[in-house]
Image (cartoon, rainbow, N blue to C red):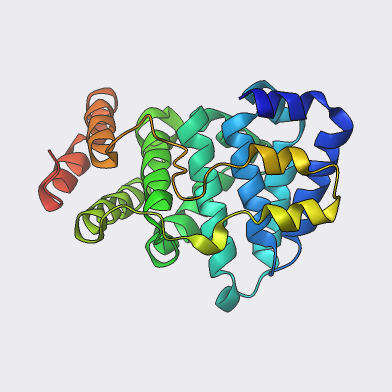
Length: 248
């Protein structure tokens, strides 16, 4: 968007925003605000700029998650999963996978196997967040040849399908109010500098970063059909998922 480009072009302002993200991420009281800004960056900043700062911020987020006690990391984990999912939903899986592979070989697969897939249903409840996860994970698992080789492919895709089933029973809606970015708080961090963020803030009641996707179930079915054709070794698993969850 024009607002995102204007912020990026103002290098002193943009670097203050990046510093603000790291500052907010270090506190349990404010870490969700850091992800709200990161998600806005994914939606409004040109992707060509991502390599300049997102690898560092992604590593910071993962390090922060690893240091949190398991009993109290639910909010942070939810924000992290939605951030990774939105990254792949908006820009494809390769850029994020390359960044994580550069940090540690097999890092994304390990995180998907031990954290993301088994815990996603426990921590992601907001309707729009669910949609983001379904689209992002489907792109990773069904578009990316490296994703096809994940040992957790069936478990991860099963989690996506279970979430689709939950959509039908609970409906899609916006109910994650606690993750709305409090721009008054952000502006107070540096009053004049962050008015640009305030002016660029979306309408919290209607914001859906994937409005162009439409119904997530149709998107997931389409991606599964493509993967079945392009990765024949996944076809039996995909057929079983389609029967179990009545995907059509």
